[in-house]
Length: 146
Image (cartoon, rainbow, N blue to C red; front, side, top):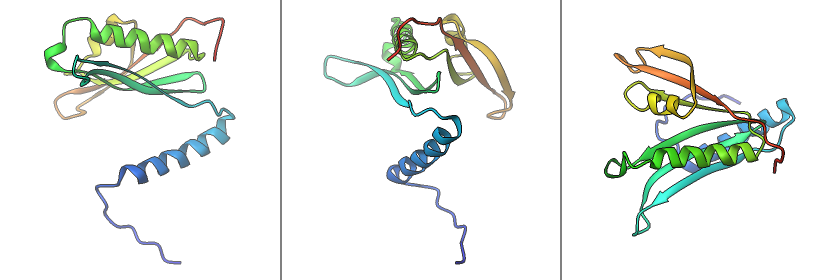
């Protein structure tokens, strides 16, 4: 069978989910852990619209915070701290020991540092003229896991 590499710059959400499932199947087999779960919290306004979110996953004692966002009109009210605390609390309850997150220097690395995250890597000129910062927070061990 001849394979053809072709451009496809807009892969559907269904295809991306299938690819993620295949990657997880490989990782699960390689590590021997089958405990991946989505992890997320939202804050909604009185109309039910999302004005803040912290979402990611937990797996094999680690967690990635993939999206953290507060609508501009709602910033400065402590919502980010509330979301981070909820995220970390749930992660700890699942037995997670470390949470990692990436943030560009023009986003919120300082906020993460105030929340106990430590810079573990910084990549200059990513994007050009800025930095991509990787941060990690170590959680206290909990006595009960789910």
